[in-house]
Length: 533
Image (cartoon, rainbow, N blue to C red; front, side):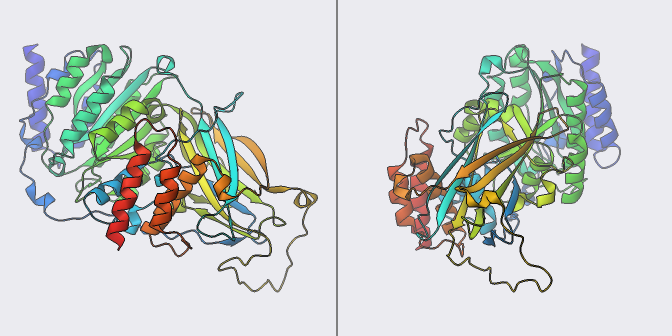
């Protein structure tokens, strides 16, 4: 035992001295030496080691948060562009990040407001799927509250629920950023609390490893059975922040450990907790994305949990989750950690379908034009729909996914569609299907979690004349969330939307919400209204 303690001390010292030259090789050696019993590994990390305790206060002086610019989806003519294709998105990070801004009495930057993630933060009462399809498809069409001349169509998916006792065994690797920028109370301390919540929900046959990275990466805890919870929790307790951020090396190490302990038919996932400020080693966003794309081929999925403020890099983390066959959430409070890792544990960990794509085929006889609200960075070409090499989003157990289309009825002008016709061709003749009552057809393609070939699904939708007032509470509430996002972004398509109407409709359509997320939304709308005046 004394020899193992001495070897660990030598290893940690080598990481400290060699973080810029050779540290990566040592990390890979650590991964290969991962002891699957792991029973004492949690006691072999001293938080006072210098590479995790270096003073890095300078990193916290400036606000360097970064978000991609969002170019809103335009209205399109259904005759000229009958097909609308996009990848699903179950991420919720934008909502909790917007909440953080508003709770600090600040308006979020427009690039931080991704409307689809605001909508998908909330769950909706969609029915469970039937048969072998892993999710149900649900469509509701009603009047549009911000433009009475238009219609609003809601497409909702509901993933098959998996009861906790039926959850497959888990092989988890916590990849934790312990660099100096993670020192604040809402960063590493909150990370440790969040991971403890998850550990306490695991079964005795699940396994956890803990990898960390700062200037160098290291394996703090080899893969350890969750029946040894005190050892896992102790390893988390001993973590401290300091140094620069070599995320690329940490990613390589975490995936190596996950592959070494791979559970066939189980949940194999890396959970990355970071502020996204990669400033050492592999720092280029495109290189990090290529690295994640490569590692995703191993069959190991990725969850990205964002923390903190001031240097938060939401754009980078969203892209890593997208390319890592995973999901992305922003943890701003202990309550949010509980929501993501306890209340929604099976959805966060268990993927029931991957590369899920949606294609809407609009009937030009019933639809003059349309606009997809949100999902700007999830748009696909029509040709990508059946191309199984094109990556798309994943859906977890019990997850709901919602998308809205604003529809322009026939004989109404389509905003921005004044285009001269082609000199060389005419639009094709309409088919017999255009003469039916079908408004559009929802097409989906998805793969099983371990599959390589997609499966098709098709649902025709009949035109409805329902008013917005007659729509379900879920429809009305979700439409309020969409309006809220458009108001925060000063969308040119917001029409007659205003905070007062959002408040009125949202307060009347809260429905059963024991966790209180919808009433909290109403309070956020009030805050935003005050800041916008």
